[in-house]
Length: 92
Image 1: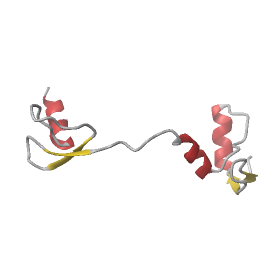
Image 2: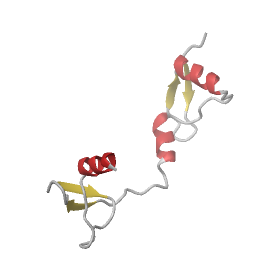
Image 3: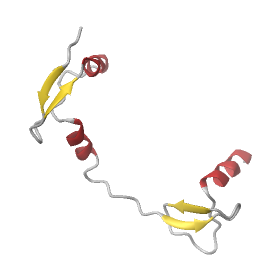
């Protein structure tokens, strides 16, 4: 069986635990190398190039509630909140 191991992050030098469950998961997936970075450094590395998406506020053309959308609304096209949009998709 697997036992928890304490590893040192190659990025920040902090110690982190490579749990028995994580080791079992790695073995099931066929991974042969142990992780070299702690969770926070892995997360930072994953999200390194991503920028936060700009959201715009609009009024739903169906129910009138405020809706946040990832595009700039135009006057000639209706905008729907996520609930009304989902209802419309179900009806099609």
